[in-house]
Image (tube, rainbow over the protein chains, first blue to last red):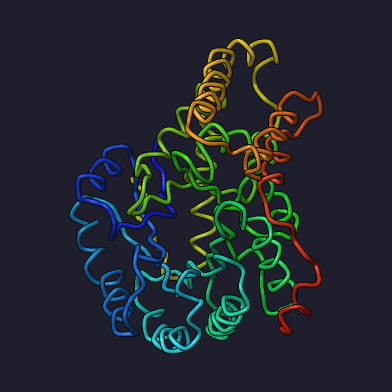
Length: 270
Length: 86
């Protein structure tokens, strides 16, 4: 079955991983800008990272037979540094018109601090002024519920926000309902020990249905599996779900969400 | 969306997995007991005990309720506390 991997940190993965995805039927990968595992020394590091996401990684991915798209943003972990945030946010507009950029992301909260909120407000404002789609990162573990509710509060307060053009990612059992209730796309990400497993992702699809739900591997530099979406599809099939239901989650839904950006031009197989 | 299988079929499919995970939890707690010193006052142990009570209950949404048990509370007046007007 063909699918779109709508959240994977390609810069942290090997070409072998990408070739495995292509062999599984992946047509396109989408890479959000994120925290690379260390705090960067200044805005120039981000400039080079954004170039990597818009110049080098598309070539590497194309070499494996897939398309590469990305989101440009300032991650929640480094967002505690408000001054650095201002400098990085000033860099973003020059990248968002590049041909593989789908919007601003992943941005959000990490420890739910006042500084993180200030940076997030500035990022939302920049994204909305440039009519961009938004991909939102929600916090980890104990901070997730509180942070997700705070993000929803901030979005609700801004009348410019169109929920259908926003994905709130890393949803779990206790956060997916308010995200869907407010009209946003809900992302579920698959990890071995944190966030969701393929089995729990399938449970959430069974409970909440297939509308506005996206599932991805979100594979990065930590413990994660770039082929986890295949595990999710296998679980769904083992439980007796039809190919059309599985395809809706792994292909139709990401296509519907991502093609709201005029840069997303999926080359579908003939 | 309804499940394409019956409750009995789901239990048949999941029983060995549930059994294995419960034994893993029991063994991990035994391992904590065998360690030197005491963690009896550690709040995480209380969270684990309370989550096991949720597991043993017959009410639905166990996964969501256990997630909430391990979550920090949400304060709907956080914007005032932060002095932020979004």
